[in-house]
Image (cartoon, rainbow over the protein chains, first blue to last red):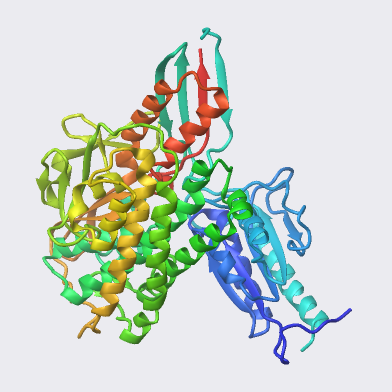
Length: 171
Length: 431
């Protein structure tokens, strides 16, 4: 099925956001994934980083037809380097029900901000989340071997997710 | 009360910045031990600043915290400039103050609404708050966004600003760029006044801080970016004497150093100290608001810190409007800073309290030694003491209510453990 978005002939607005902290080893995986995905995305796609207070995501995805967030996290049963793709979080309110806060030093985590956005009616048209299971969030730069490979996998998924969305929603 | 042993655990103490643990031991009705346990590895920023160039601390230390990077940048710049014998031009001072106002607005809006207000309204989180008080959360998010946008306009980006350098800025914003923020700041000033009115209506448990209150004090301005070190017990010294009066003690159970007075007493930095010592320097609109809600000229109840933060947010919005009104693009965005051998000190008021930096440079400007004393580390002792007194006064409460009160007591400090390391986990042990 295809459907036009954007209005007045403009292409859908696509936002890709990496979340994390590049000075906490694997917690920087979200940044790296969106940056590796960027060359494979259409020029109009907006690629950005979100560090510190993640309520900034509400502004980052404001008005977007598609937003893809990539974050490193820990969740029950995950193996380091595993990449999980959660689709259309606005439509699926149960998707993050069992998730705690993403690893972070800030007051709210990504899962909480998604719930907050839902409560406020401030989610983008479609919101996908790529979560990378981290192994090491110690101080410092560079990824663990598992997460280094996972970053490439997440970047591929982001590029594929954007491509599929744009194909389904032509101008 | 029996002597039955009870051990209560909160797996995560939410709505503080970071991770760690707090342990409370109650023997019957007697509180026998209260301590904050910081279990995250210590931060080695001071160590890896050694050997770096004198121009680098603003960018390196900004990474200590995603909530208050400007505080680190400003204290670092001030200390390096002090070491190099440089004073910046007045327009640069004003621009730094405007940048800092942006950080205060963002940080205070975050803490007041999303982290602290849920305690007072009896809800678990900002999410619950959004369901029942959507307009309140929207106001918070707009205030935060405005703070972010000030950081972007002056600092180049909202997190870890890139436009700050020793001596000033890489580029001064145009008058037009800043004026675009003025109308929103006028809205924010009104919204802050509404915030003062809202939070002053909360119920505040009785508690009075007994510690020495320490903050910067400036003869003209509500101290944010500069001043002398002052206290409610008559302290009045230059920032360069900080380490003669205040020391940091390593506590074995914690990865954060605990600050105390050199004579062994505890002290408190942050909104209560700032407000109590600088009430007269608040702009009229903020003093009027304080009077309207009965705050008085001093505030020593840590639970009322949320009202003080709201008054400070109002003051900074008003201050930012004034700074933008008076802004003229400086002739140069930065003054030249040539290195020289020496020691420099800097202190500014991070949203959570006094942040001190000291750098020792060699003749080539290479850093030989660095000392960073964040506010949360200075407040650790006071935080433990408050918790002890809160538990003692409420020892008969049910465990869940007592834990909630303990968490609230900790959030009174708006602890940024990502600065002083990290913090989560509360354990109450009853014997």
